[in-house]
Length: 115
Length: 114
Image 1 (cartoon, rainbow over the protein chains, first blue to last red):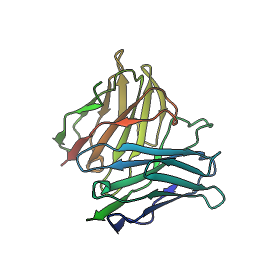
Image 2: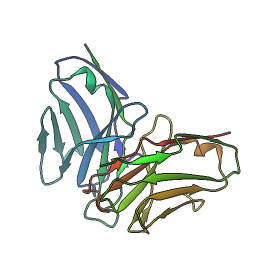
Image 3: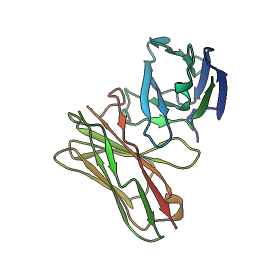
């Protein structure tokens, strides 16, 4: 039972354009969401997070949008750079529940930014 | 400040054997979480240790066990290895046990079970 779904295994964009990575979740207890980036042979690196009390969080070129009614979040990267090419994982947690220690990850989306 | 390190980098074992994977947490962090990442999948939570005690566990059988030491480094032990245990094992350290305490991942240990 995939509680966090990233339905696009891959995405290819041109340098300078916007990259939009999508994530859906099914567990209504999830109230804290994160995006991680992973390069080959390295561990995932934290990018940005958002709490369910917000619908948008921005950090430089990275913005995460949360639509609670649709149980959907997206990561926007503007402008995209070749160094952004990596696998992006969406993760979620029920931060106020008994499992507030646990992150549930999606399968990831491979982003390729072409020069 | 040193980051999260894991050893060994790669490991090959046969079915039925036992394996121990190691993780050194980042300075100032008291929590280590372990994840299994199978090919083509996202990391799946195994368990978390906070101040030397198991703080939570995912859907993994008891043959997956762990330890955390007074310096907050950690071990993952897997007994009676099965072919499906072949995966990348990631550890992450954090300054606290909650999901809002950002987890910093090591590079992982690639385990192959033949």
